View 1 (cartoon, one colour):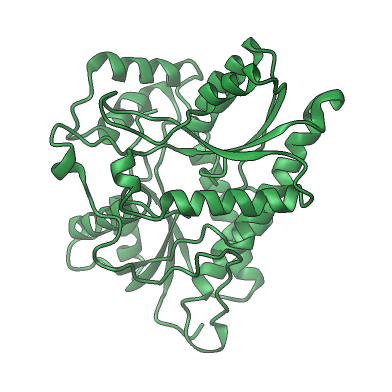
View 2 (view 1 turned 45 degrees about the vertical axis):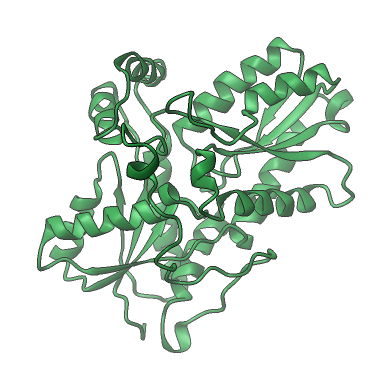
Length: 354
């Protein structure tokens, strides 16, 4: 490999894997925030209802193996590491491991393709903090660009949504609505970034692949809001929207978790548990598309994004099929600002606690 990078780091939010992990995980997620104790207890009980396990870490281990295999298949000698923001393996430990392996400059891929403070810039801040903890031997780490319209995300998402449609009752399938769900964020935060535009474009592109004739209505919905009810967040909530659709005569929905490429607890709880129960309560047939992280095309996309940054003959083209344009490697200094202290001095309403 002829390039300036000698490692790839996969970065994710993290999640608990056993009951003993739940409390430390939630403490990391909510550090410095004014979260009511009853709210934390409610979230902890949700995790404990599924044995304290989020699916995210297991899926990241599988993705780690798949990315390594894809690099080997392309004859690219690039070691791959993995670190989480809020659960072991923590970013600080991953960076220390990289330093111990002699890594000098690495690329970091984060498990979200969209641009906002909490889905992009904050990860960069976390990487800086992890390098600071390691000290003088820490590698320099550059982040991989946002990539909401990469075919390696969209094509697997379309196939998974088609599979979900096929699971609906045959007599309702043809009139099903397609819902694309992503994590809600405060509207003040959404106004400072391209998060909503990117989610909407990804949904539009996937819908066109699934239903090129436009037979099925489709729309973006939001989930997993946290924080003070006085702070406006993106709406409609997915479960609320299903109930409204039912009142309008809709009797089947297929949902793509387009905002969550890697399977995680928020999908499990907000869609598989809450939204599906609400749908059942109003007589709406419900099918949820699987996340795309275990599709070989997704691992290939991660490698594509790394290869973009390599110098020489190994460097590759930049792929994106949307109208918003390819994101730059380095974001402008004023994009996706941190509004926590300016607008929410009592705590961070942006990051999930469920």
